[in-house]
Image 1 (cartoon, rainbow, N blue to C red):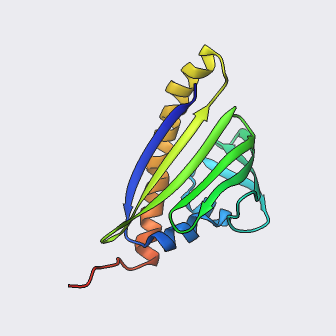
Image 2: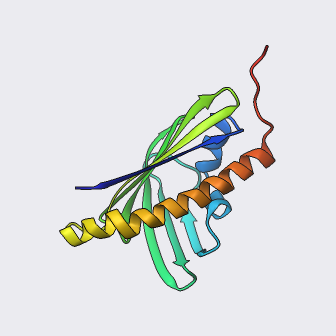
Length: 159
């Protein structure tokens, strides 16, 4: 049975702006924590259903991680989802949902994941992996919010 993680953040940029930002894999380094070092990133361009992304990074500067992901769902400007094909998880699907808000948008990150299929894998998923995701997304949302504020003036509804 897979585990589910969800986190949300209010952003001062529009759904369209944030969708464009997250659909470009080259922006990954702008939201990565300093403990996660990108070694290489290979892709044929921005998000397109079926397009592959290969990521090689080092976590905590020493643990090698190799991921091959595919854009699973691309529905501008509200839904962007990628899934792991090869990597450390049996299942890993990451969805970005962008919901309009009077002052920009709300971004919802939902991760469906499984690290192993036994009771041990479930235990690791629900403890260590969940704790890692909480910290990772707190940092990612902090950086995303900072980027949105610096690059796009807040949208305001007309009076």
